[in-house]
Length: 391
Image 1 (cartoon, rainbow, N blue to C red):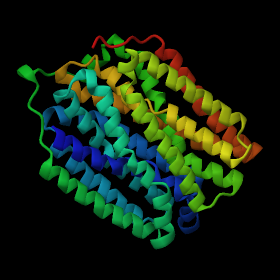
Image 2: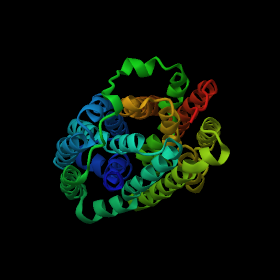
Image 3: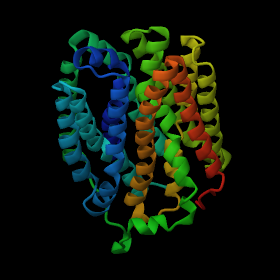
Image 4: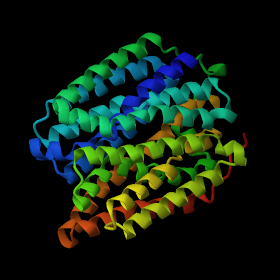
């Protein structure tokens, strides 16, 4: 189990990289192929939607054919192929297709690790281990900040993406060679998505799952770059550094949340407190949107720190899954979590463009951050009706 988890964790670095690297490419893509902030918001949203849309078939595949073939095949075809298409893109439409391919290709990596952990690990330690896997993988988030900005300025974004395609192909081959599938579920029991959706305990968890990751992922994945560039004139290298700060905050938050459910004896209230604080940081950023780059970076870091409850959310839901539905259960939660980011990212681009056309950039970014804050607040209020898992 440990070798497979370690490999999946390291390769998950690529998934985190691909969901965040657009934040530092805005200037280069606008200059070379005419892709503006709304185009990139749409492309980023498509990445998350493709990632989410792949979860249900991945859940079936994990339970039927295992993580080894599922993860390696999708990473090779979607991840490596999409990155290569991105490198040769000549128009925003090709960027959209490339991001969809990459999103689908990256979709099975983390859930394959969670699947192995859910099937072979201890339920009591799931949140801590899930957070550790996510935190290590989030080094890709850091790589998508200043290092990617440096690569763009040094060798150009096309050469950088071609190199990433080769790295992704190599990662897929390593997965196929070394990951081992868990044993079949005891008794050969089968189940369906309907069995999961009948579980009333999951109903108040799902709205929170839908919004918990969106503020941090959408802002770090895209909006921190256009916001600081448009409002304060920061260049590519400075945007990379600002993204790095937020990425580090997200890793720190993920590591901090991991053991807190055991420290406080509850997952519900740890998640609720973190997301309410994230909502407050978003609303404060909306109120102070033009008050200086340092304030903006600090509040983006706070959003990343407190909005990193994703692995604890997965752990909370996992406590209600029977063993034979572990794969489908984890991927169902991932569908809501990543799908929420995708839909909100698409909406954020429309919202930003509509408000900017009438009231200018300051108002558009205020509306954008308020949108994320209110969504987190609404999800948190629905989550109040949840209960802690029995184990």
